[in-house]
Image (tube, rainbow, N blue to C red; front, side, top):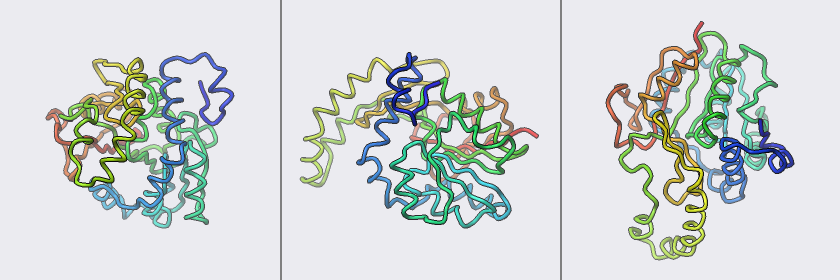
Length: 276
């Protein structure tokens, strides 16, 4: 398996598609612009607030692993509200800037595909927020689920979000965002980025995949290969990988009905548990 923390292994290994997607996305998340974009973001999404409120009474005694901390958005809400808190991200630049804000937190550069530094049955709660799990290939995604299941204590909770394949706007390249802006300055900046975005978009088309269960899409003008899966398929995937009961939450914080397409929500939050 490719280790994204080791640039030599990224360059020298024989890459399969999942490795390639993970590498490409890792390079983008490590750029200064990506780090700066998440530096001051602290607000929770409505489903996160609902989920954290439900878990609040237990958090004080729980050991928590927060994966993909980015700019420290969830760190801000969790680090002093649980028994123990460890935050990880595979981008060293992300970890470095979060450490500068939360000096007494245990923040580490780690790869979610390989959590071998953490013992089996270590955590009551594992979080992977803001679709961080969607920026690896399918095989790597499965590896992450298995690793999270291993480090969770029996009955432990796993909270994460994922891009919604049922969303009506999926796979639309971002032309309309260039044509519908109120700010001349923002519009001009977007136009300057338009040509490289188009080139990047079509260069990454070879990595796109449409499978029965999921899709890998270079959507909008993000220049990421992004994993999309419907709530029905995601819940089925979790059950197949050995997780127990799963709840899905829409962007307004309400519970989703598993078999009803959520075409107005671009991402869905999930809460599942490790089977005792």
